[in-house]
Image (tube, rainbow, N blue to C red; front, side, top):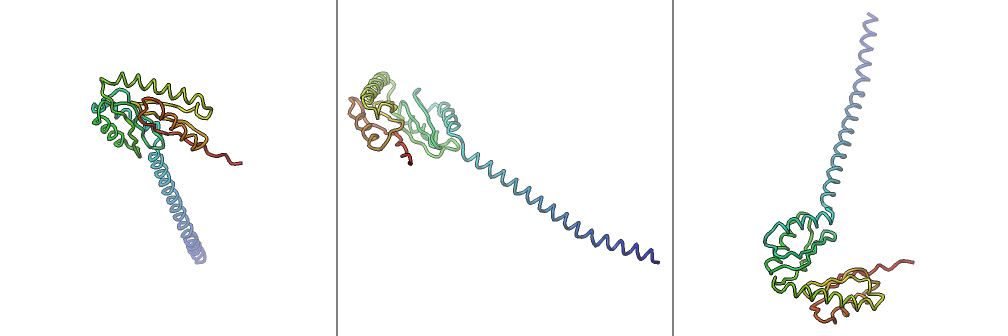
Length: 203
């Protein structure tokens, strides 16, 4: 009788301790599951962030592929550059229709935030003359800039009489001076100033 009682008591004790252990195990399983879910969510978030921040070089490549595959974009001299998701279209096309089509195509590329259309419309027949003039204008602007230590490192490009200035200058006054000097050169229609002003160094 006593042995039966002891056995019964032992069983009750085992059950009593097993219940919280099982509950604890279940609780641990739930916590582990929660951690896994959170980790999975984090991976998904990171992946979407990576997808969201597509590299500029990738966008440039995708835009080139799309543009050059479309027969509406007539004109061999089309250059593409991307800065922080903004696509810049430069060069020469045959018509206003080609220029508009190029902008539409670039806007349609996934990941492109904005499109700056600086394409110049030049009829094919006039292109050789225009290209010759562009080279002369670029050389003339560079010659003027070479005489000034603050301007000589500026990059100069010309598209159909439109001079584009890029690079870095020490301050806004030098940037304005560059625009003024370039504008004075014969044959220049306008000056697109894309110069960066250097950040003032803290002491």
